[in-house]
Image (cartoon, rainbow, N blue to C red; front, side, top):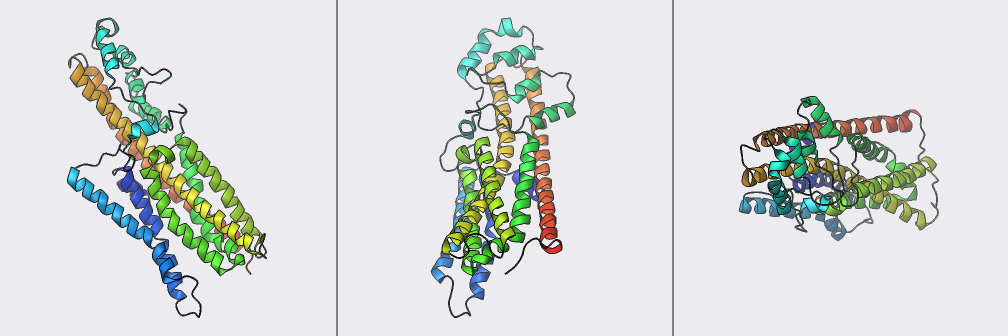
Length: 381
């Protein structure tokens, strides 16, 4: 998983990451196919052939979208990562990031060049002049780092890492810390690969085989679609508020599943069909929240660094086109050095994400193995 995060998540656009997540999640459909094959020899089929064709539809959808993206890339020769594939709205606007290509900002710098800059070695004045015109908007991380002439590379990396998770800046200038994102990913992985895999049957089977099969099959159906949605609609999903909301939803639904498994073999409302409907909805909702939250966190981290690099590149272009190259040479070198730091920190962040997903899954599996097998906390029918 760590190699997967480094080689795939870091290098490819968000839409390809979403397709990769969808492919991984779609593997759960194999379980549904096997269940259908196993019931062919029985007297009564739980599901018809038509229903299982519907269940296989995400695979066909994934294939069609993959072919369309490949055709688009071959036709245009590039894939603009900052563009939302469906809404065609820029990720800058969706995420609340603003560039520095405003003509009034450039004019402001030109008009005050002699008084503000004075000498080519005054990056502080340049940074002040290139501050965005919107009220309440903070300086970008790149411009802040340009003021640190004597700061070491390690300190710059630490600053970049600790401030790298800015989310919905149109609503709030607060930033999600890296440690919070990693902790959330670890918990999500532990719940998904540890708790649900170990005790899902204890919570579902008391309501009958149909509830069990329906819950697993439906969750396998919607999970890849939710993974697609995060990259196709980043303006809605890849936000701090949505991530926290999805994480809270995961906590509530997983707590209900854990409680039902603890009460097995006589959970709540087992005597009527209401309990089966409720536990199916809760189980599917839990899987949806986990998929949305995990994919959104990874894309939030990746998109920040990509957008930061886009801003740095745009600043270099502005400097070259609007100003005396000799005057701005020092400032341009600083921006280029920050581009390298941004790439290094992106690589490190993806590595940390891969490690924490592995660690969370491992400890989640070990914990619930002990609870189920050793301590015998959950009872069967």
